[in-house]
Amino acid sequence: MSSSHPVALFMDRFFHQYLAVIRGLSEHTILAYRDAIKLLLCFAADRLKRDVDDLTIEDIDENLVLAFLDHVEKERRCSVRTRNARFAAISTFFNFIGREQPSLLPRCHAVRTIPRKREEHRSIDYLDAAEIQAIMDGIDSTSRTGPRDKALLLFLFNTGARVTECVDLVVDGLRLDGQGQVKLVGKGRKERVCPLWPETVDAIRTYLPHVRMPEPSEQRVFLNAN
Image (tube, rainbow, N blue to C red):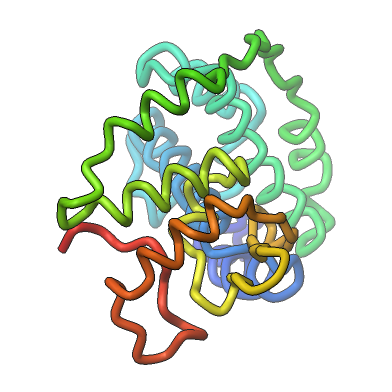
């Protein structure tokens, strides 16, 4: 009986049970983990001259993972932040493998203790009030997309929402009466409530009649031009 452990044996439980059910991670996070693992396995298959479905956990050690991370940064020209994000997904995968198969704990520990690379933290640029106003003044409110663009930009300036939070925002997440507010669902499905400026509320009220709303609980607020 072979003592090796095919990587394929762990995949279904890792993605569909551990990440989705036990950890309760968002779809976006799971997709990011999927991409990281896929890149690692393709790199390992090329390096070892094996088919991906023939790879075993024993084929992947800390040296191979380090070589992959260098490949991500130098050959794929990704940032240190992306390198560390890829490694975070790989580390989670090996943590899961160690839980599932204790005999592999030494190998998993060696991979998971690879140091993360230090990132340079740059100061965050921002727009002042005059610059924001100049952008808003450049919107043609009479155009087909003008009301949406004005509402979207005011919403972003007001809330500091991430792109995914804007894309996923549904009409039921808005409260436009009284003190306007919005419920945003961010990374890890964490919810936060943010107050809305009166001008943001007015812009959204002007824009919403242009949006078809068969079911407000599911209707996205900000749609593309089509």
